[in-house]
Image (cartoon, rainbow, N blue to C red; front, side):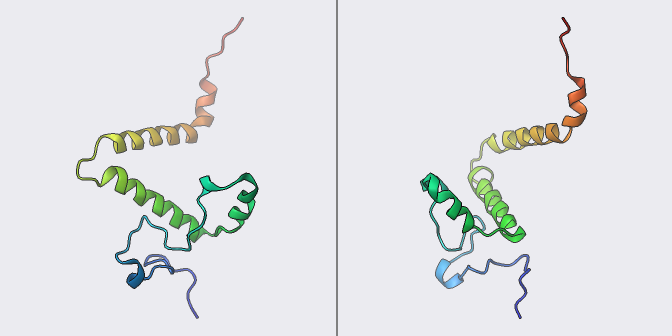
Length: 111
C-alpha cells in the first residue's frame, strides 16, 4: 500500500529520465490550457479538473515561490525589487491583521 501523504521528495509525475534535472518551479503534471486562454464557458470545467487538496495547494505555493526566487532573487545581478516586494507585502499583511484595532482610530469630520 502506497502512502498518499508524502511530504518532501519529488512529485509523483516527475521522471528523471524524461525530465532531466529537477526544477522546483516547474509543474510536472499533465499540461492543461492556460487560464488566460480560456473562454468564459470553459472556466467551470477547467476548475473541475484542478486537484483540490492541501498537498496540491502547497505545491502551487512552492512553485510560485521558486518562480519568484528564480526571477528576482537568484539572478547574478539582482536589483532592489525583491526587497521592495517583501516590504510592501509585509505592510499589507500587517495592515490586514491589525485592521480591527486600526479602524477605531479613524478621523471623523463633524459638521
